[in-house]
Amino acid sequence: MTDPVPESVQAAEPAAAGDDVPKKRPRARRTRGIIAWVLVVLASLLIPISVISAWAITTVTNTDQYVATMAPLARNQVIINHLATKATDELFSTHAVQNKVTELLPPKAKPIVQPIVTQVKSYVNGVALKVFESAQFGRLFDALNRRTHQTVVDVLSGKQTKLTKLANNQVVLNLTPQLNQLIDKLNSRGVKLFNPIKPILTNQSGLGFTVVSKSQVSKFSGLFNTLVTLGWAVPVVAVVLGVLGVVVAVQRRKTLLRLAVGIGLFTLLLLGALAWGRTEFLNQASSHRFDVGVAAAVWDTLLRFLKADLRWALLGCVLVALGAWLAGPARYAVWIRTKTAAGGRWVLAQGRAVTSAAGRGVSGSQGAQKTGAWIAEHVKGLRILGVVIAGLFLLLGDNVSGWDLVILVIVLAVYLGLLQVVVYWARRVSGDRAPAAAGAGPTAT
Image (cartoon, rainbow, N blue to C red; front, side, top):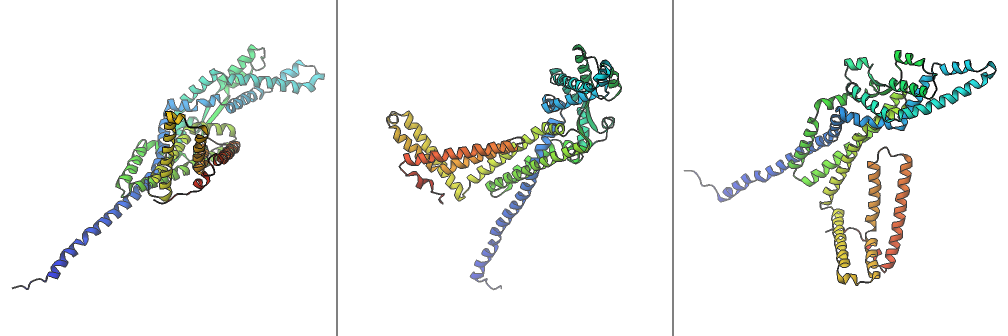
């Protein structure tokens, strides 16, 4: 016969068995947290890259969109001036004008040969500008871009194909027909000095416009080729990882905040990489004796939609992160929510007062006092709003110059100065009750 088990031991056994239950929950939460962190990091890296992937697919590898993207180059004054100068130099490279003027003038008039040639060259340059500013040149430019599009994709991808070998690993638009058109236009105006050059232009390379060369994009071709090869898989996987990261997380609001911050930081890094890439692109152009201004116009035109997409993505991240933070229990978040709600109630009350019969009977001085009290109370928020708008301008602006920055600083300073004047008036009309309210900071709730 077995000995009876003491009651104390029997009571202890269920407790010991139950100790494992609460231990499993922290372990599960910890596992979910680790998985969420991994997914958030991967999504933070892949979502900005997916913006580049979508741009490469929809803009660069799509012929119609590529032609439309590059079309502004034919209307860019930097390009037009470059082509007009290059065409003029091409016509005068044979010294045909100088020889003809020398033949027509007596020997004693030799000192004025060069000034006459200079005047003729200036006249020809003016005619060339009109040729390249014409709508016909724009249509020719678009047609040439359509014809060379596949070569551009191969050069950007770093592929060695028959097209790239024929193009010597660079894309050059042959504009000799426009040079011949310029000669015909000069003929119609009585300037027939360049007719002997036409056969030379036909036999030689003539006038060309370099779009891109392999050396200029050699550092970026690997990434571009990978993104084009993967196609839409990168954006789809990136979005799925981001959604899973938030769903799996224990604290979804914080995870969403971390995801937005991570995407925003990596997007900033990509924007910085594009700025560095532009410098490298221009350095390569300079080392190969390409026109740097033309190279800058090509880079900015081709990548303008990508930079805009990345900036919009960054703005979205800022808004999502701000919303996730404001929804949390942080002291300042609660204070902002409280003040925003109070401001909304004040606006509604003022609206009702204005539209109601009783409100119409209120004196203007009382309305001014209420308005002044509200402005003085929310002056900090109004200042922050001005700075935020200025920051958004810098963020979303395309190639903001130093002069643009100076203007932005001046406008911001004027806004803050006017705001301070309004606050001074507000404190006077509100009977000096607003300063105390304005100095009140966030309170914990």
